[in-house]
Length: 187
Image 1 (tube, rainbow, N blue to C red):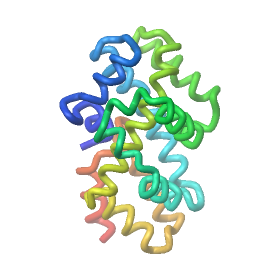
Image 2 (cartoon, helix red, strand yellow):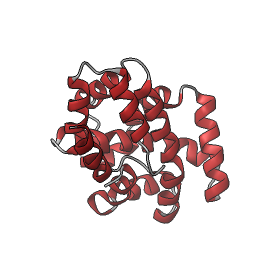
Image 3 (tube, rainbow, N blue to C red):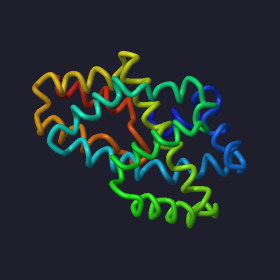
């Protein structure tokens, strides 16, 4: 399952419903916005993982960040603390507010939604994406196994590069099924 599928389908679409309700848009519009915003976030994650100690930083953030709470309790997405966490995540993934504004503007062109709404939605999507990854990594699933295996070798830059190149193979999020196949090739 990809991050996108996890966000769109988790708990019967509760994350998307929460975002839609918080921002006064339809669920269809919120889903379309998530679909447009998420690839920029996964690309940012991929770039970060390819940096020295990037894999370790991601693993640390997933282990201690408590981000899975956003998937478990979608109502938290509207909390000010979640928005602050989402903005911090965006800072790590995209690097600047200008980059976030560009992502929102591009999504606005493709969805027809107001850029202001998408700027408000972006930290929610970032928090939900980290929540989906956090839930998978703490659940002992394929992501956890793959990341532990790559980091077990000292977190080499080669391992980080392999994971980074793999993170968004389909430009729609992390696909756990593909990760399992990738892990089988490594081990």
